[in-house]
Image (cartoon, rainbow, N blue to C red; front, top):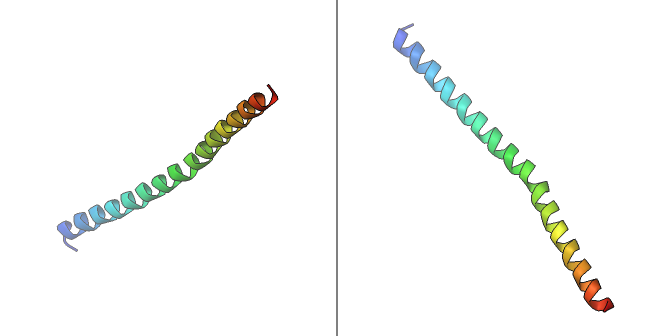
Length: 58
């Protein structure tokens, strides 16, 4: 086996491995951000409901 072939194969393996981890971390970050966003929206809706109830009571 030629040294150039070995280096090429190692570089390609590292690139494929890097792409796999980039996709993995991208998906993981999107999944972990979703609950925070929905929780934030839920808190805002609760605040709006409280204000509407307070307005209705007066």
